[in-house]
Length: 344
Image (cartoon, rainbow, N blue to C red):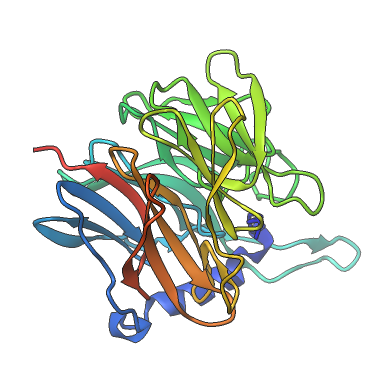
């Protein structure tokens, strides 16, 4: 299931629908075991809202006032130190006219405009900081030292009304100390709402790019020194292992979880959902929420969110890579998006 970003033309009606959904009382979501914990770990869970789970307690990350989720539901990120959280938002940005007909001297009805930003929340200070003024913002990924953030944007520079296709999107690297954005050359085909991941040494990014027609996407590794790119596999949602020796990703239209070495060798299926009845995917179909491949801090296990295409069930499974043992961690709970070691 390839995730093509939704265009700004759809933003108004979908934002209105989302606003209505977000007003539903939490009990109405009907979720079961929403969160779980792991020893000496911090876990990030998502959905319409985001939660942090620790061995000593859980809490909800407050959404900023007047914010709406970004269209296409790009993936959030948890900093390696566990002290920062990042995700994109859409905010009202005044009003504008639609297209005008000069022969009739009329314009379409005034409609709300929206801007997209990348938001970074300090879990220690409990404050938000926002970056940019974009047409759209994609999934986030913190660098290993937590001082940079990678995400794809469609810029409003040269395209103030966010007309589709006027300005190509690009992957950006944000320096959180200075606020400076550095565009990544040749990154217009990066899929905005797919997972992306830094190598443990901070020198490379693993991304998913749009591939040929009828392709779920291509996994590429970008050298952040030379900006060269190498395609290593077909799939989406790449996630670099903490040890640096593997990249996990989704393949076969989100039906298999794969491992591959960063040089493109050794591709191995570690979990295959194609044999299950009712069409299971690494995707939560009931709420149209995308899944991530989440490594344990020691690199020995993966947490994987699975959704039932022909039903409403969705689980989080823990996969022991050495033994192949699968443990169900939650049933009909929230997708998991991050797992870092708890720092004492």
